[in-house]
Length: 61
Image 1 (cartoon, rainbow, N blue to C red):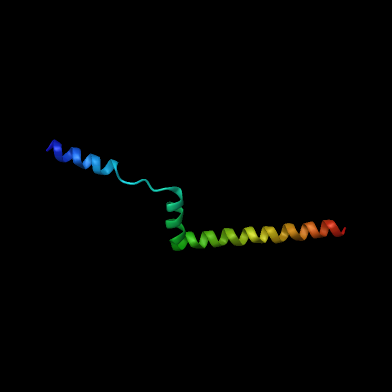
Image 2 (image 1 turned 90 degrees about the vertical axis):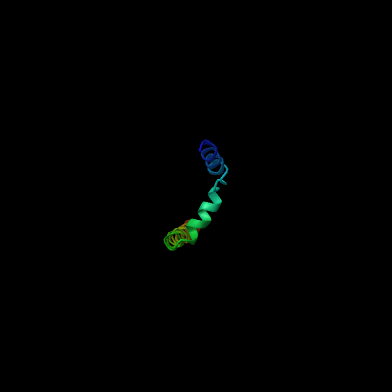
């Protein structure tokens, strides 16, 4: 019985650890993760447009 428990402990301790990149990849494939990522990208690009408009306005005035 203890030999079986020992083998089970070794199998669980040798399971590969999931890296952050792999977890992010799985999360982004999830429908909700994709919606959140798209929203963040849209908000970020809107911020770039606003800062560009501000810089042009500042240069012209």
